[in-house]
Length: 264
Image (cartoon, rainbow, N blue to C red; front, side, top):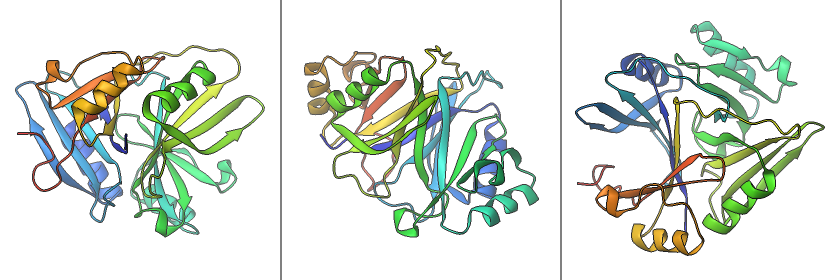
């Protein structure tokens, strides 16, 4: 099972405003889109995105212009080169981006801003060889039981630790498939020690895992007792969905980069 993280999806209220924000401030370009009767999906990413890099999927439901972010969904993190954090952050401020946590308040290690819908975006320092500027480094979700969450990603998807941070009140665990490139996105599992629970909200969509063969991958997930949220048969054998122990949705799909990102 390869399982590279393909994209992260979140919902936006004003698609054109969001597209302008991401293309202007993060220099993203539109990779593809899907127009349905009731919604639009748009895939975005840096122009020179690595083949294992993850895209951002913006979903706009035509009859809804606002969403509840909730607190189970944390943020996406985007990369800037070492030594470029303060300059990149200041450029965003000069361009009118909403500040959330500046580099000084984060000991010069990272910073946070917000997009027009209030989605949090962390800016992290990385070696340029770890991915293009503004490429997605990780997606953070909050979990109520660290042992269960780590077991889920390890057993179901064969992910392994690529980093961890233990503090007095919380822990962060970073997970990727074995052998994933530096440019691939990680999932960050945040566990707060105080036993709190979380609200999912409807602004947070899902993570997507790329499979070499959808049906083979799904069969393995079934053998490992993953929840069947939407099976391949229910999705015309184009993709499928499972859920983790906290209700975070995970899409499984095949990807053909020779043409449209979407199945015919």
